[in-house]
Image (tube, rainbow, N blue to C red):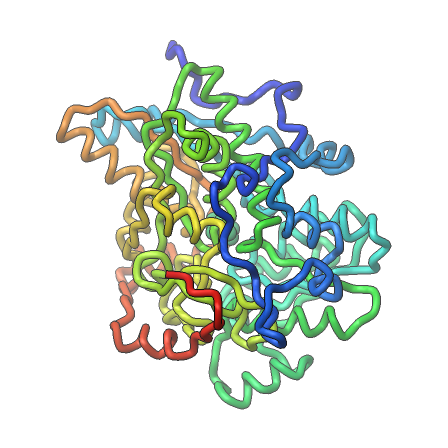
Length: 461
Ligand SMILES: *Cc1c(COP(=O)(O)O)cnc(C)c1O
């Protein structure tokens, strides 16, 4: 019998009762969000027409360290949390590594990812404010599913603008979202002004997250009793996802473990921000802390090859300007990129932590290497990982293999953000040997950078 179990679940009495707000411990905040109409810092009230008010308050709160999780949200969390902390004994054996590998598995709910953690809080806040419904976008479909589940639970209407290629490639994902009572519109669509404009400019586009965001925001601001919610990037989303890291840290403490390395995949940065939250607090407070690695796709390399600049959150340029690592809001990742994490920008908090050296490293990985890791992991651990999560698996395996060479017994913690059951087309492409690694050239990235805006008075670099 192993001393540490394969799956470790926290006792319900030890579940977090408050979200942890990293910003309260950061020495320096990220530069302000900018209202593009005035080129001045956006105020909390500027966002009221777009987002539920409760979320706007969380977005601008840089000082409250712990923000209480409302009781109805905690009750809902109890339907699928705690998520297990898993010791990857079998993967360690297959790799022949002396490293100890742990992962926090967020795929144990029907939506299949960590996104439900934030969806629940958002749906609760929107309902409490008397809204009839919310709109959103979804790329790979996990966010749309998570929000559909949360809206069904709290009694809200939901319209999901789904990136067109995803809607075509993932009809089952669409069906699940509809099962939970939400309406799906493939994006770009002719149901919004911005969608019609994008279609005119790029009639054959398969869409992008940035463009679906533009449509969902427009749909919300043009209706009186609906607002828009976003499943990543924003400060409030990182705040909600802190439940991942708080649970993980408590569980590791109970097992007498402290990680040397914490590894997470980074699309918009929310799971990474959540996973590292508790340990990042150690670093911010000047204590011993792990080495943090953010992993992104080589085909959409915002941290490793992007600019730290102000940029819109969407292709249609209707959101506020965010200070972030970005490839430019007009950057469209290659259509053959199957591995998720397709967003052009990165959470302002993650960007700031990375820029200031609190996140030690960002690493870009190629998608065939990611799927190779996903298959090895599946065979060893018996979990079919999401392509996004498999970016973190790749780097965790690489680090464990380094330990094999050096003989170091490092403790590695990575985030297994979700399952890949709706990504079987990508797995099939990989098995059939037709998956390719597309890495954008500097010239292609330059096109995205050319679309960046300068904000006078707020230099970032
Ligand atoms: C959405 C998603 C991600 C990436 O989003 P972040 O905001 O960067 O966390 C990663 N893994 C899975 C399974 C997802 O659904």
